[in-house]
Length: 306
Ligand code: SF4
Image (cartoon, rainbow, N blue to C red; front, side):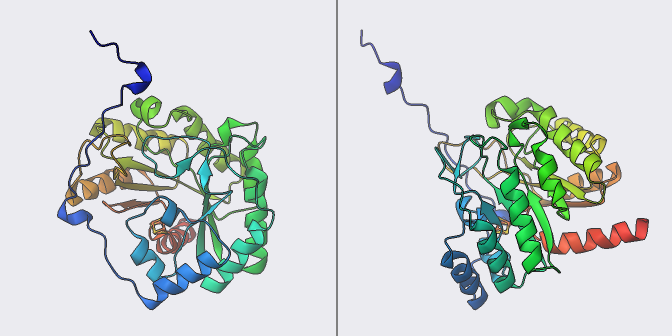
């Protein structure tokens, strides 16, 4: 009998399912696309568009919409759905806030989305750095609205408050998946911890719009998706995004199935009935996809309600 050493037993690869016709992203390498690329590359800025291999990059960058990822390109967690690299991150770049502010200025953005890797190695989870980036970006670009997509700061004592002290226009924290899949897909996070963070954020800064998003296609049921909607509404979340999970590689969590466009429309109708002010639900929806247009609509809705 051959004894196999555990370390030599390879995990089975998860084959990638062929994409359906409605998932194809557009090839549109326009002049604007290369302008965005040169502005982003000039200061070695990191974008989630590139790091996560986003399928919308040609469309977004052709409209100069890049989503900045601060605190480096290496995440301290290893979520099973995510394509961002994992490892020991580098030291924070003390000039990053200035570089982001300048890039937003050069791109002439009306609305900017700023996200980050998880920095569980930092005592505050990186919340002070978020604060600096928001303040510096606003100073240089007073008419640009700022949306942050934050980690959970490892549920470190009140870290989120520092981010909200900088008065971002939108505070986004993604719930990512239904509660049942957390252990496998998002082991470093807690479903109820993320809900609590969103609830606390709204309570702490009543001016801020809160936003969250989830991916579908892991094998969740419709009932579980609706439960997430209810839980997010309980946490007073204003805006919801729902998009298709695209398995980045054979090493990532296996895709269970592709939802078709009419299923996304149905989820949008259900979510709107739950009371979200704005819902974006389509195969290629991502947190930052069309975030500028959605925020403009959201502002108008809020003005009409008040
Ligand atoms: S959807 Fe977001 S992450 Fe993807 S390319 Fe557009 S701005 Fe970048």
